[in-house]
Length: 91
Image (cartoon, rainbow, N blue to C red; front, side, top):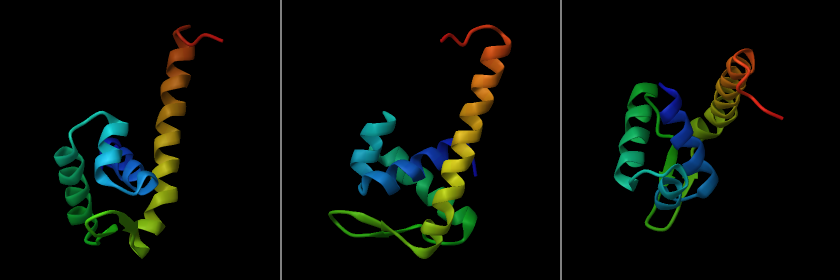
């Protein structure tokens, strides 16, 4: 599991569609789908119920979502902290 996969997972969960999530994260839709499949394989659980028009979180997806958001927020705080040590963070 890596931050990119978690970022894609959160985008799909929030957008409700792989296509809109791909636009949001600025990658092709097949790349988002592939990373989500890899994450699901790694976890051994489906994270989304899929149909032609939308996706919904499974129980496993609902359980993962707050942790994924927290991991992404922690990584961002870490980047900000390092930037502030270098004097790069402004205002």
